[in-house]
Amino acid sequence: MKNKPTYLDTNVFIYWLDVGSPFNSTAAATLRKLEKYKDWGVTSVITLTELRSGLGEDGSSALQEIQALVHTLLVDETIAIRAGELRQLYPALRTPDAIHLATALISGASKMVTADKKLHSIASKQIKCTLLK
Image (tube, rainbow, N blue to C red; front, side):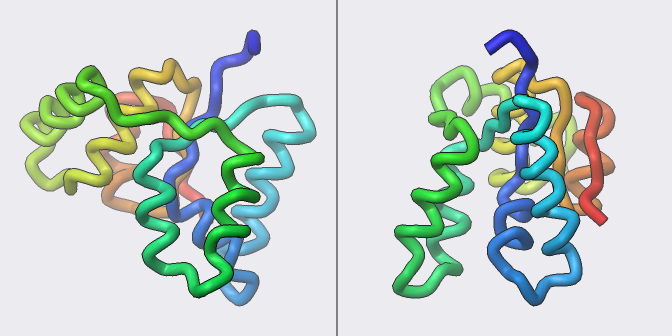
């Protein structure tokens, strides 16, 4: 894979799965764009945790579909330490969001996509960040 990945926050998948969401079409377009241009997406393994807790009994198939779309990165010591450094630098940054941002940075992602305005404002100081609208 020669291109740098695009990091996708959990909420991109939440809105993609929720066809009634006002962000559904934008989230779907984001995923289609990755596919169309042969780019690749990455996300943290905590995305699976965050998603699974909100999915019903059919959650396993949705998770499998997401895992087929993007590379899921494990949280290792490097990411955990970087997340702690980011929390120290930005005290308003919640731990899950710090893990997402650290994973994006460590993965070498060219940009991050999120619908979280607070995360977007902090992440934009570290990486190119697109706010899902």
